[in-house]
Length: 131
Image (cartoon, rainbow, N blue to C red; front, side):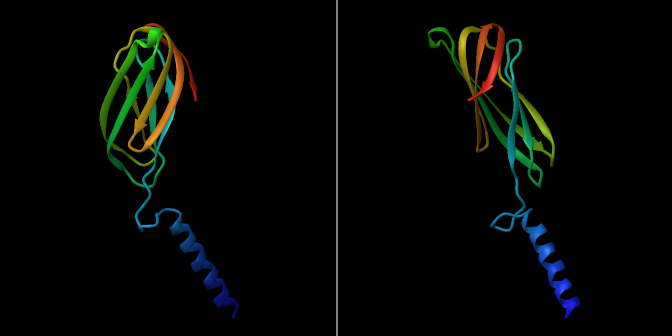
């Protein structure tokens, strides 16, 4: 009787560990995360992390920068990442920008969004804070 009980516990343990790597459709989970967003000279950079269980391919991304003095900044950069392996990361970068004032940076990667606020002084993008 004890051997059967232990066998049942082992089977339940195997099933629960298998459940952690599949979704409701029985497929492995693909999950992206937008990590650190940094400013610098002329550009904004964002780190894209694959925190899922499978390689992810054909990843669409977009960086939108708006705001500035008199709302004169309205810059959008888009791209496609061919593949990010499991536990891998990729850096995406905006096109060059010049301006002055408070800015809002909205990053979209597939279905994941992140918004940060910052300040631009000529070509220097400073103080990026998550909303």
